[in-house]
Length: 240
Length: 244
Image (cartoon, each protein chain N blue to C red):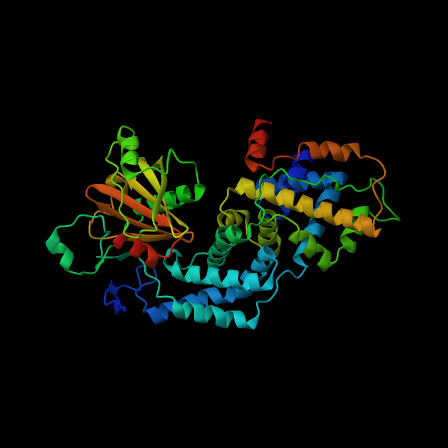
């Protein structure tokens, strides 16, 4: 293995580079890092903005995450998913550092759900259209962003990773450092909360009409909706 | 597959997370059930609406320049660097201490990476301590009959390093003691463990470094005891802390 040694100011010798990336010089390594990581700057910034909700903080967060990523570039295996790796460092940096100083509310339990909105806003159609279609049509980008920003960061994170950046559940689990089951239940609840907020908001604006009667069928479906565990479903299916 | 399953798994279905069998069963039910068709159509519409919502803001152009100048300040990433500079509390024959020799350890991925991963997990967990804010002697006594090795505590030369407490834990299949220190407001966990847990870190002169999720872990064996020092502190400061 080729070793690239360089003298540091203190006069001791360090090996600036290593095994994984096959004997690159410090300069080459830097170029390599920038070529791999910088294309995701916009995506990371967009994520940081949703986490911090402030442009300056988002810039600081992306910078910290990039410096960290560079520092730990050795633990990234070439050819694997660098986007997920960078997102993981970004979210970790956010939770570790920013939260400590800014005292952002922590997710105490996953139990928070709204419960105002059920997918069947009305059993009957309103003016020839389904009410949920009216809800979807009434949504503006601004309102959706506001609703996402009002979620706890843990919930906002999974929705953005999934719907905006298209990560798989497994990748999200790695980025958010939690089991896939938790990703699923957070996604479920995050989307429910979003729909709930947007529904109430649309009601307030008068774009949709309140639900007139309870929909027993819809309620029944909701009751079993607490777990989102695919394994238990498969197990149940096998027993049939 | 019934209506309840559709409510639960509609997201997994739309997010493309179903294996083919499940996807077919799901689609077959939805095809035959107007109620579920409406759910799927709404969730699909909602997902599409989020996707179209232009949440992909562009980074300001100055950010790239900022990052590049921050990277200029960083030393080149160091991989498995082995420092001849031994930890201050490590006893080494006097003659050996004089020579500064660089050694590169080719670490097998097994032991030290597992230990690094686990020590970061324990470090992050912030579990309560078994014994708190005591003197070194009391900690040693506390663990005397609890672990099958002598708990030799590090002596940091940084006067701001304060021992906060300790707890029993494990690294791989070995019992370990996690000593928690505060150094200038930053938490440092020092894991003391049977050196067998670190079978690929056998050279007493070297500290093997690993980065795990933004944390630094320095591992070494000294006087028949294995150590894993874990912190968010950057590597330079950690080296300074343990090597005086």
